[in-house]
Length: 239
Image (cartoon, rainbow, N blue to C red; front, side, top):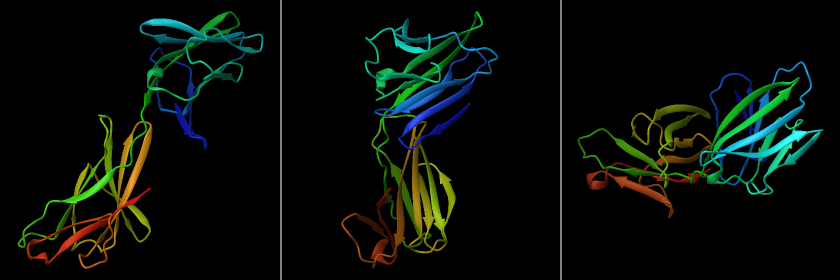
C-alpha cells in the first residue's frame, strides 16, 4: 500500500486488491481522505457499490453505474462524499471523529464480484508540543540539561523523538519525551527539535541552548546550578 498527501492536506490512499483484511487508513478531523483501490482489470467495470458499517449495520452509501456516481443514502455523509475514477475512488470531505469505520468497495466486472475494505480511523489534529527544561543538578554533577517534551492530548498513540542540528544537518538524537544534554558535548546555541507524531500528523518545536547570561525573552525558560555557575535555557520556536 502506498500513501501520499496532496497540497490541500487531503490524504490519498492507493491500494492493490488482495486479501480479506481491511486496509488501515488514517485521516485528520476537518480534512479529506480518498480511498482508491488499484485493480488489475482486463474488462471494464460494470458497477461499483460503496458500503460502510455503522453500529454493526451495513449501510449502502453510493454506487457507480451507467457512468454515473449515485448517492443512495443521504442520511450519512451529507454533501461530503464524492466518487471519481469510474466510481473506484471514494472521497470523504470534512472528516469527523464519528466517520471512523470500515468502508467496502464491491466491484462487478464481467459478472464477477471483487471486494476491498478500508478501516478508516479519524484522529484529532495534534496540538503543538511545548518542550520545557527541567531538573537541576548539583555542582558536582556533569553539566546536564534535561529536556522534556509534552503535548496536551489524551491520545495514547503519540510518539516523541528528538533531533539536533549540527552544521545545517539534522541528526536523530534520541526517541522518547525526555532527553539529557551535556553542555560540554554540544555547542551552545545548538538547535534541538522535538517531533511529536501520531499516525495522521506530525508537529515539532525547536529549542536552542544558551548560557544564562544571554538575553532572555518572556518565552525563555531557564534552570541553573547551585550558586548560578552554569545553566541552560531554551528559547522556544514553534513550527
